[in-house]
Image (cartoon, rainbow, N blue to C red):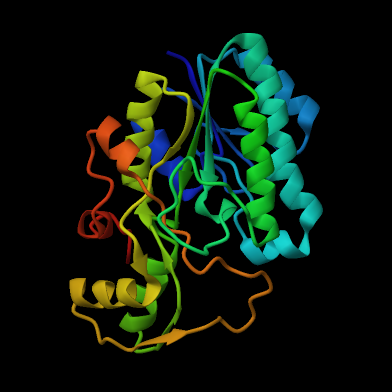
Amino acid sequence: MKTLILGASGQLGIELSSLFPEAIRTYSSSEVPGGVKLDVTDFQVLEDFILKVRPDVVVNATAYTDVDGCERDRERAMKVNSEAVRHVVRASRVVEAYLLHVSTDYVFDGGKGMYAETDLPDPVNYYGLSKLVGEAYALSYDDSLVVRTSGVFRHKGFPVYAYNTLRKGGEVLAFKGYYSPISGKLLAEAIKELVETRRTGVIHVAGERVSRYELALRVAEAYDLPKNVKEVDEVRGWVAKRPFDSSLDVSRARKLVSVDFYSLEENLKHMVVA
């Protein structure tokens, strides 16, 4: 099975690369050893590359995930998170490749939490909107699966920020809201299983519902650090609105995937820290 991983330099992409060692991997800025540099916003080159490689499977882990950056540079957000997906779909359809596209909990407004796959998306910021349009393009192709996830972390992300801040004696400012953080390693393992079974449609793969305040305290407990954590309504400098509770209902995925990607305790084991 010839696999193409788009976005192999990100936290998820790094973990996917270890699980698909023979995969063709692309990156845009951070170099990936043995990878191919590819600008997904150069749509003609993107399509030509997929047509030349002729993969059996395409995993699209490329995304512009800077939530405030998407608000400031909406054109880039739409190009990376939406339009590029349309061109990935066009080429995948020609070579008859199975497409797994990674999306986000931020397609929801955060009004209720524990969102199921059947709930109606309603993003509150441009990042969520651009990812929702990307989902629509992906789902226009019958042989595709959209995997929505939440708060992916590995060597970056909120849990790592909490660890680094507390270790240095600082105060963690935790947004007063909920989500479903997951380690890149466990998300990658779940994705590998889903690729092997070639599921289609939409599926949620994420961790336990938790507040960032509680999560920071759990990190402190796990690493015996001071519990200097403060819950705040918003973080200074934020441009984009955040959904209050974007947690995902993953009951369907837990029935289909054997790996324990859900428990917070298991996820925190795979946090990469110095």
